[in-house]
Image 1 (cartoon, one colour):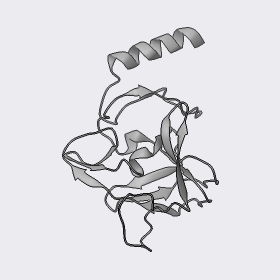
Image 2 (image 1 turned 135 degrees about the horizontal axis):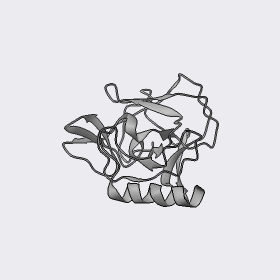
Image 3 (image 1 turned 30 degrees about the vertical axis):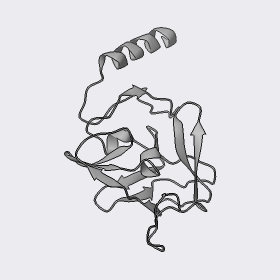
Length: 156
């Protein structure tokens, strides 16, 4: 198992045969797949500890309840063109696209988070990249505005 504690087998919790944790130079630790997943397929179930506050590896369940999972779902990398989406009611991860062996699982952080633990520059490289990652209900902070202005000057 990926988790350091036992979970009921046969319930689609992530197993080491299907996933590995690797370090990405630009984005940090992430979950990489060891097999293919088809669009529309359930990738895995999530588990963790529920907490009433935002931490670095939490995912928002409700505005005042977050799932802390530093072993699997908390390591999903961000992309503005994600490979997976999360069902935070059923705690399931679903493939939005076909996922090839060796790819990192990516989600759009704004799809679940009202406010992020920390805003940051986006390194996803997608055509529709927003270049700065925020939660869905927060404005770009001062660091983000400066980053985007500087980026515009370099590229413009």
